[in-house]
Length: 151
Image (cartoon, rainbow, N blue to C red):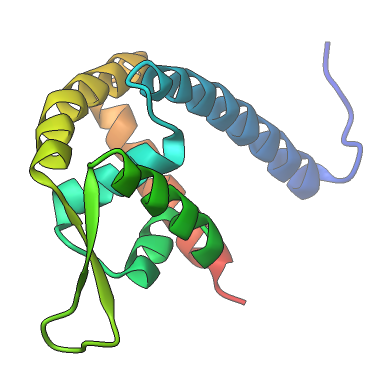
């Protein structure tokens, strides 16, 4: 059974691609979110720990850019992580007006314990695709995201 073009071949293909991308992202996000919650963290908290664990200390503004969240939200996330002893705020050594977020020793320990397990979980989810397919998909998604991010 063949379907006829509803909005034109170009638009129908783009809409179909968008729906598949949205559905795949939704399922991937739900599954990884469940895994992150098993560590007692929210996705935003995990994202901050991941960014600091891989990139080192950052300002709240830098964390916002890495996490794609607002300044108000990052403040609440950092507040909770600080309350739990996983991060600390320090004045910048070069600009006393600036605050830099650092992992505490407990934060580094938690990061080293949970990130490898999460990386393996994500690898298992993605393993339906071959390594070459994952690389190709990554290249295509980067191309798409970069191109449409420009106004």
